[in-house]
Image (cartoon, each protein chain N blue to C red):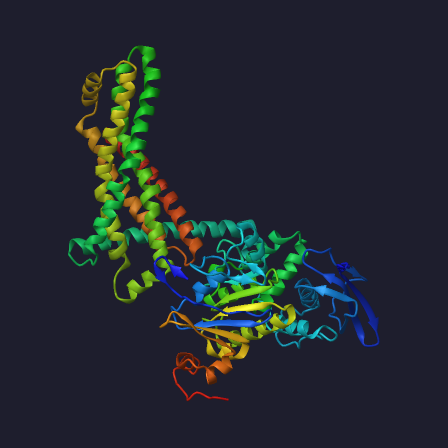
Length: 243
Length: 378
């Protein structure tokens, strides 16, 4: 992954299992969001490829890639809500675009998606009228609009109060269990990582490569990479457990 | 390979000794057929659900159940009511619905105005107009105060900013000012020639173009170009700074946004507008001269006739007006930028408002000047 001549990350090699919650973590500026942009096809890797099942996403032709990416739901860091549309319209637009759905069903779906993120009744509000945390939650509701197979969330918990952060973790777990969605999250919120993640990838800023991949609890206690243990123990480096 | 047959979704109300039962069946898909609801709709949430015949489903099913529960009497806004029974539903659905029901519905108040009676809307519109006038007067007052600080050496702004803005609204505006002024001169000459040639007086095309350009068209067209080009850029720049909280940061450090943002733009436009106006006048006259040459008026004769028609008073009127137009454009566009909201859409709105306000103000001022000059017999 690079921006022009600047190589952001190299030698990344990891697999994400179906129906798991996979966290991409690392220090600020390590390239977590850039990796996410590569995974959803907004940026091309300089070398290598990204596969979804048997499909090589990187070498797919644009129309094939476009149709495949309809299975994605993406929440961007700032929410990226369309500011000229109300929250309801932000969610209903992709729904109406995806299939011929009755107005009643669209209304019910919009209400349901907003309720899931604790924004019941905010259908007629514009993004400018709500707080940053609410925008983020509305962004998640929009990402879930089409019941995506793969849900990408870029720093979903940042800027949320503890109650809403907890609620979000709960929602993510329930989405995986009820819809069987694969959820890929960029975050460095340790509490969330330990609560929800099945697997985690640590991006190392110093070496510009992946520091470790595995279950976050195991990485915290047993990782061979001290930077990973340091990160997951909030800067304290306990002796490595060899169990 | 067998493909599963899709069954239409249905919701069937039943009653037994436990109370109301809602039997859900079929495949509930977003792009599937409409739900078939049997028996009369009820205002009571079901006590139990039967899902034995339920096929595959997506969010359509929980969305339908949520809507059903919300429409049940008084449930939408109930903060202290217990979560209604979700018995019988698949466990995963129960979890999602519990989550969705855990926060009460916010009653959106801002939609109330949309349904307000006409008189209330008129009242709100009047208040908005009054507020706009008040805001413009307030802003103009603050700008004059900032100018006072500038002349007493107390204003804080970076001279480099002033030079940047001068470059932006001066040199960089020359191509578009040249094109428009040349075309305006051309059009005036064409129209004038058609009429004046009827009387064999087509030499007076030079008088028409010269006087029209230096008194009105040169300055007004330059002002309109600057409103659309530079005014919009000012509003967008300052509006973006507002969105990014850069203006709050200026205030926090004790810098006046007026000194830092408004003064350089005001000075730059006030300095550049007269120069651009003189330039536009000359280019417009050249445009007229080209048409004159095409219809048989020698350029030397055209130029001599122009010099005879356009005196110093006529020329200075347009240039004098350009100072006021420049100030009006700077004030309107900076004001709209500083009054912008905090979303990206607000920047677009501020830019539109800035252009509309600037052009309106230019035309209003020009009308006022026309009336004054007529009264003074100039």
